[in-house]
Length: 193
Image 1: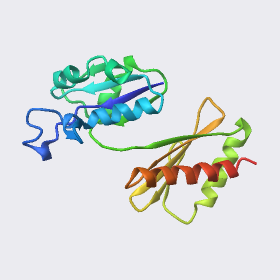
Image 2: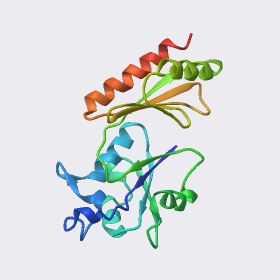
Image 3: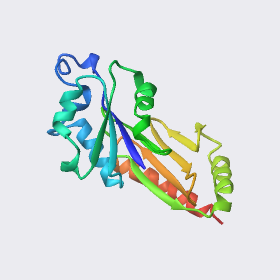
């Protein structure tokens, strides 16, 4: 599975910082934001990444090259004109498989990805039980269940081809995101029976 990193942010509200570089190239702790995202993808096992690059694409290409410095294979989907979020991902389509993960190249996160193995026959039951368990707070169902706690969230998605559920979480700190992901992974683990 490949990751897609959207690296086309013009960062109009950050001008003049972004007058000569795309927003994903702004430094955070001495490295471009996008470099942090690429390292996150690599830590989670992604070795092939497609970057969507409409605005000042040469700056991104010149800095990251083929991705080998990050132990990645980095491909580029260039937009002749900005196509927006969905349009940029669609433009990258020829470089993607059926399954891929989309990441923003101009946000800083340390999303904790946790997988919980679940027997095929239990996946529907686990998701139903989880929804019932969470009926007292704001929940969004897409391909899975997204649970909100103030500005933090957890996303629980059954894997379409494997007997497992994936848990993502995002919070104010990496520690809080990790704790939230672990909490929901434990909850799902307990609902398998």
